[in-house]
Amino acid sequence: MDPRQELVDYLTRQLVGPAGDEDEVLDAPPDRQYLMGTLYPQQADLQRQLALAADDPEAPGAEEDAPDVSPAADPVPETNSWLPASLGLSFYTDAVRIEVSCTAARYETQRNESGRGRRWQRVPLPSETHTIGPDRKEVFVLDGRAKVQVTRRSYGAGTLITVALINEKHHDGSGGKAPSWDDMLFQCGLTVRPADGSVLPDPSVRLASRDPEERELRLQYRHVVTHAVGHGCAVREEGGEDGAVAALACEVLPRAEVPAIRAGGPLDAPALTLSHLADPTVDRNQLREELAEFAASYHAWYVGQRSVKVPAWGREAAERNLDRVRQAVTRIEAGVRTLCDPGRPELLDAFRIAQRAMLLQMRHSAPDQAGERRHRSDPVALDPPVDPDATWRPFQLAFFLLALDGVADPGHRDRGTTDLIWFPTGGGKTEAYLLLAAFTIALRRIRGEGGGTAVLSRYTLSLLTTQQFQRAATTICALEHLRRTEPGLGLGDEPITRPGPLPGLLPARPPRRRLGDSLRRRVPAPHRDQLDPHRDHRRPRPLHRTGRGRRQPPQHPRDRLPRRTLPHWRPSARDTPPQWLSARDPPLLRQSGPRRRHRHRGDPAAEAPHRRHRQLTAHRG
Image (tube, rainbow, N blue to C red; front, side):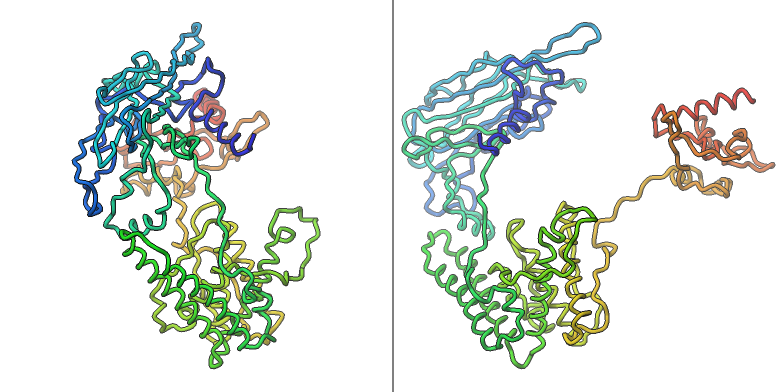
């Protein structure tokens, strides 16, 4: 079996069920064992229904040539409730009759012997298949525990049909009582087939939105054909022999295969080789020609996109996209001219230094260096040779050229533009912005603008945060290595460093609640000076494990004294105990630190020493 399919099957068994055989017996409630594919009883306090199960063809922004229709409301009760009681799908077809199949199971609560609790026996319900025509709207199924509800709406030359599987049991929820397990349906399935027709593309994709981004997305994904819309679930399309959609099935655990994405462009261009770009012996004019040829490939792609035929409804969105492409190509071509400008030689020098730093960064991040964990005693090459064949992906170099003018000229209009690299994880976004960061640091040093903060990096709190930090730190170390070993590069005398996180750039950890702080908040301000000034009230004293496995405070000579000798609250001779002390407050306030009982802990092993001490104190009294 395919390993991926094996993983999907395992997740389906664990989340939808059944995890065992067809007649499995569960020791835990089934709605806690299986989190998907459950239909709960209809609840009066959670009644919800969709105003329209499908998109309204006459919604604002619809196509001008849309057929003149008046779709009726299509209620699907409790599809999106917190505890859903139904699931279904809507599709467009030219068929008059449809074939509906449904499956489910229930779990019967069984009482065990006295003191043994309850168990739940799975009872499969017989699957049913019904052919439903226009004259029927409801069919009771699954031994009367559910019903299939069909709603039809004429639209153009076909019919919009919504099929829903609804749990017929009801639960009033009075007194906060939870629904009964015997009234729930598990592992629910619903499949629909056109009996005398075919499934047509969903007409809702013809609806236009007023949002520009929605229109652009619709244009870019116009090749994706939608045949059905799920309600409380996804829809799986089952193909027939002729390649058409033969059946539609509700999918409570959606799945999709995302194809791998690789960077396109002129992969064999000589301008993509890092060692070639870092070589100071390469003539400036030669480099300009190579980079201009690289930029010309983007311009050729832009011209090719201009000749692509676009539907009439997408021409406005296409013009916006092409206009942004034209601006990006223009900025890339301008970056080539700026980089190779003879009047600004410091730009090319900083560019070559950045290329050398990235060569070192890529080499030291390789698996045989810092790219994997190893034992401290394992030998590691201190100065491994760089890879002469290391190359950029086209979009990485294009991003640098696109942003060059805005970085090199503080007064350039591009300073007001934020450039975003949109690419899947593992595609090379990090190296793209690290190249620009290395160039910025080297350029500031060569121009004599001094050190200081050159780049601000903000990471999200995710699993990639540590890796991003390591790769950025490796780049900084590479720059510092070049500064120390080659003073002639002009990187100055001040070290190139990477400081730690600055306050505010990463979310702050919430402060821990400490017993002493809460104690002081409970004591009114006029009486806080009566607390023992010789004892730290901010935190309880640490506990250590004894030989018996119990946790108790470390012993101190003064801890052996009776409890009343070191009170936390010291009333003066003229004062009486304040009125704000309740009956349960004195033990918390008057016990010395090591014997203080923390009501929030609740660990019997931890409280045993305190109980023992209170018993001894009572005998002494």
